[in-house]
Length: 359
Ligand code: GLY
Image (cartoon, rainbow, N blue to C red):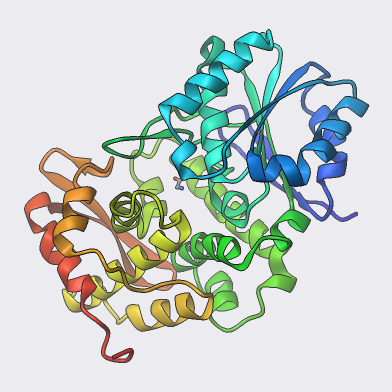
């Protein structure tokens, strides 16, 4: 079995292991970093049905003592209520500082379980086991954890790096098309940031046979950004490309629109705005739009500029009377642009206009 490994030098440093059928041997992989102890698996109702027993058996075979907490699948669970239930569960399971939490699932699970691990007993170890494309290429790496508040997405959380990330590519291959597309959106985002090698795979290539390599490319690029700016003082903010409008779309839809689909539309909006307002040095929107469409992702939203602006202004990316936007300049080059909050509406409005090539 070939395992690709990417080292991330943040926190204490950890390996991201990427390969086929890794869930069945995850106890062995985790055992290389963490001695047998109590292991609390946090998962959701979908992943519990599909993969929990494989992971639990593998851990028990290596001498871990396993307990499990499952919550209803969906973004609505990324709440203070679920976090509170997980923390109580860790207490009831008598986890100590020498034990660990395992996040088995997608981005919601990783964010919740990581937040719980980062705060329970003021921090215990955790391992990310992403089962979705989105979690594999983005949320499982880099130590961002959190929950949504009524006022906005990811407004409470901690930065806490995992001990290891185990990414089973076979799980990603089984995803329904809609869920796979969510991950494609974050991988395309990484391609816009990192350059042609990755972007062109989504623009013209055949993605599924290259999944392990694509995940490795995304993780390697994200790792380089996180290593340079773990706590998002500057450079890491570029990973938020498409997220100001994307988070606003999620919030306006009451989270009925998934993160990846919202970010896709958010990237198209900011790319069109960049072209129309002269923020990009060459036209970027048509290539981005065509690549999103090719990967079954949206490039427009039905929400108005007024509603999106109001939602975006409660986003973390606001700082006083300014908000930082990530502007795509060309494939492989994005930059940060601070604008007064009073001009956000006109930027979003410019990005909502239909592109001439699609009309
Ligand atoms: N998902 C963006 C980041 O981890 O910074």
